[in-house]
Image (cartoon, rainbow, N blue to C red; front, side, top):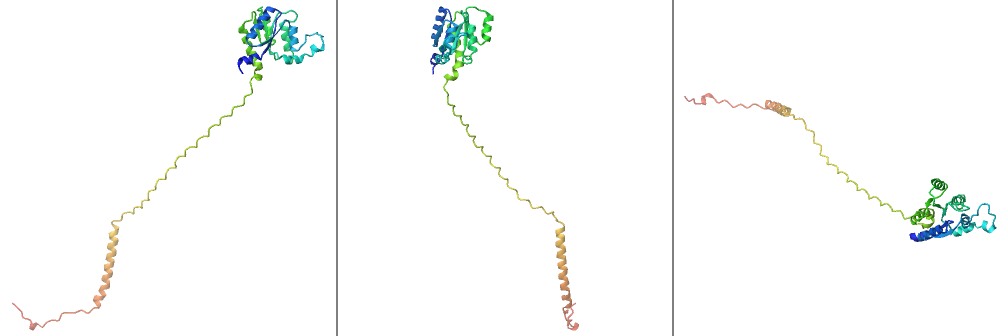
Length: 241
């Protein structure tokens, strides 16, 4: 929906007893693409809104005109402050005192710059207070109040965007397990060098073996008969000189 289409759906009720000011307001509002209904008094504005003026004992048709407000669908009221009969301030109080109309924005206009009057209107619920002559720039200020009130109805319900799924975290690369270091073969405990004792042991063993051999041979020698060379007779020997 474009901005122009949205603004053309807004309906503004303009209230002013001066025909010149009323025509000016109507022209400015239509130039801003608003639908406009104009009336010349506060009591007629109440009729458009479906309310009746206090003390008005008119026919039941006028008192039961509340459904007309729903058909008209006024989105904003802009009214002059100084008007005969019901002033713009009185109209503001009636609108804000109605449970069905209190949410309609009300803008007050006046050709008199009276701070006390302006503050009283703003404190009692007026959205803006314009000084006459009203300009086209003032009409642009109405947009913020209209959009704020109408925005929930104008904006189509947007389907919620699907939430973007967070990418799954990449699996962390497992660190390679450290290769167990090859254990060096245990060095054989070095036996203490026994250089000196070894020969002694060998010598002792050799000596003991020799002694045993000698001991074994000795009885054999003793037991064997002794052979002696026979003596030759002396007479048979020639002695040389």
